[in-house]
Amino acid sequence: MSEVQSIIVAEDVHKWYGKFHVLQGISLTVNRGEVVVLMGPSGSGKSTFIRTFNALEEYQQGKIEIDGITLSHDLRNIETIRKEVGMVFQQFNLFPHLTVLQNITLAPIWVRRSPKAKAEELAMQLLERVGILEQAQKYPGQLSGGQQQRVAIARALAMQPKIMLFDEPTSALDPEMVREVLDVMRNLARDGMTMVVVTHEVGFAREAADRVILMDSGSLVESATPDAFFSHPKEERTRKFLSQIL
Image (cartoon, rainbow, N blue to C red; front, side, top):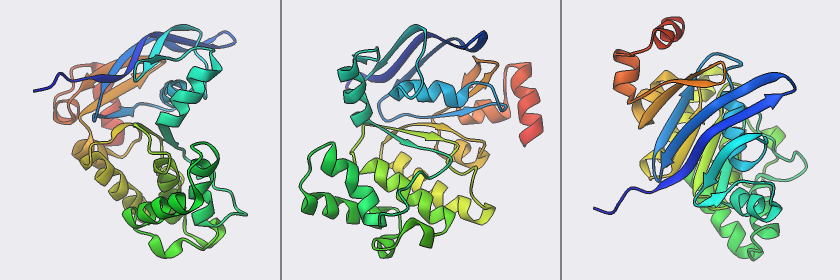
């Protein structure tokens, strides 16, 4: 057995917005191929925390390493890390004036200097993987919300990242569209992608996560396997949270 390698290491991470202490000394290690789900009430710092992993948010104290690279103010390090970390947001953030295919190939062509034909071949493979190959020549406005979010996932995967971050990827979707996005995420998890997911989708957390973590008030409250987290939580704060969402 090869030794398990950590790919995300956060140590004593603090962040303030002015006087508001949004992240209060968080430490978390995520191993290669692991799926970690972050849950917690609104305003608990979940989205802010995962956005520090690719420098969309700065942190003021502590240390974050992504695949052995320290996340600092060094722009070269940030650029390297952003190439390895894909992110999918609540809103799809697709370019409305570009086709689905153009949205997906833009970053590989411009950032990774991939030849257009190669980028398009990969994009078509990814569209097939997320189940919307037939939408390649359409514009985002012609797609449903669920289809747009699947395009956003394919776009993130086109950079061939080592880590995928999901920030409440189904919260802006109509209920009937949620499943098609979660199915894509489940398949990614089964394929061994390292994932950190902020979500309230209990079914996904039970089925796909290796660990579920509760955050509250900028701190990690509890971390456990899905079965232990949902069936036998140790912390009173976790029990109260679960009583409100289950």
